[in-house]
Image 1 (spheres, rainbow, N blue to C red):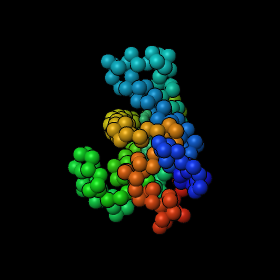
Image 2 (cartoon, protein in one colour; image 1 turned 30 degrees about the horizontal axis):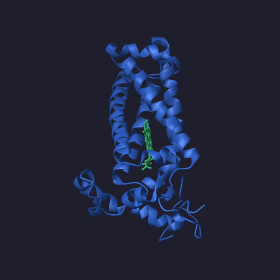
Image 3 (cartoon, helix red, strand yellow; image 1 turned 120 degrees about the vertical axis):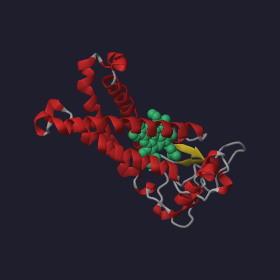
Image 4 (cartoon, helix red, strand yellow; image 1 turned 90 degrees about the vertical axis):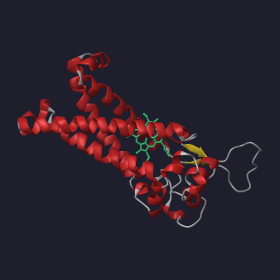
Length: 230
Ligand code: HEM
């Protein structure tokens, strides 16, 4: 199938929106498994972080169960995000237009998109979120392994564990903030959620927010470098 659901020669009825494939089923499942893991990790992690939030442990069958299950969800998140990383890292490489886009953040926030450069599959904000998530997940898994006493108690010193606990908690707080930005942006830019639920966006959405990507998809310069739905 081409980038459009509409093939040349097809009858297009008035009012039928042109849609563009953005994510294949595998990528969407991969994304939602990752998202579920992060939410469960945030809740179970916060439950262990502060006595006032200890009541969250009820969701996981009590304190000991929460403590046992939290690191395993972390392992699933790590491998699940690795899947996303392998799929999307190339599309998140920094391009010249990204600097310009970022410098015009005021126009982004006031929805003056006509003043922004044309961007590819992801804009600079999405790329920043992607790389921040990638770094933070590596920091979280590494620091998490240091404090996973059930299996690795003997491999590190108490001083190393103390430092790891601090780094783990700070990285967790930052990734929760980055996640809030990610979700807020997905809701704020109308039509974006459909990309990750149905796998498609409207042609208007693609033209407005990711025009360079759309041009590449419909056969312009560099079309062979772009796959419609990764
Ligand atoms: C649970 C709430 C979440 C929602 C509602 C959500 C929504 C979305 C949507 C709508 C997109 C498509 C954006 C586009 O194509 O322009 C997307 C992309 C993406 N999401 Fe999420 N997401 C959530 C959680 C997460 C989590 C927890 C992670 C990782 C830890 C994550 C990682 C990604 C990545 C890597 C992409 C591809 C964008 C890129 O590579 O820059 N998402 N998300």
